[in-house]
Length: 129
Image 1 (cartoon, rainbow, N blue to C red):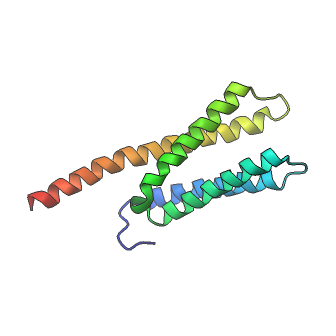
Image 2: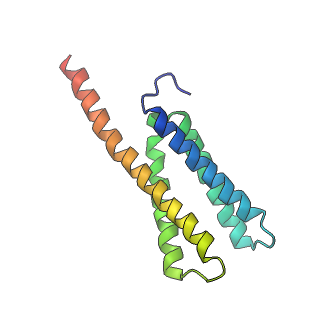
Image 3: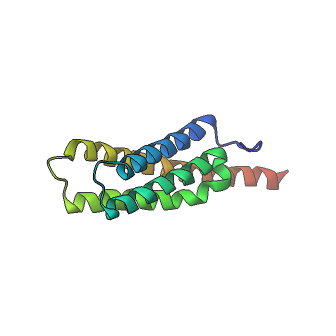
């Protein structure tokens, strides 16, 4: 971790949790009993976003801007899945995964929006000194 990481331990843990979530979902979809090529492609992308969140967890302030891709990706996936309709067979599991995706997207937004306020305040205090 960076020695200049003032994002807070809670955020570091949050981004590690997001990474682990994406690793688990991506790996499960890739290694499922009969994944189609489309399923495996999506799973690889989900896993790759986990790498982004793991990198962000190591230094949240430095890599914060890449979280906009996570916000977009998670909200877009939820919107597409809900618009396509969830089948009865996997509704419960899929609904839980989509709900968690929305929670992570919301958390990313909170971090991104409050981070700019903190940076603005820090910049103002440095300028005044």
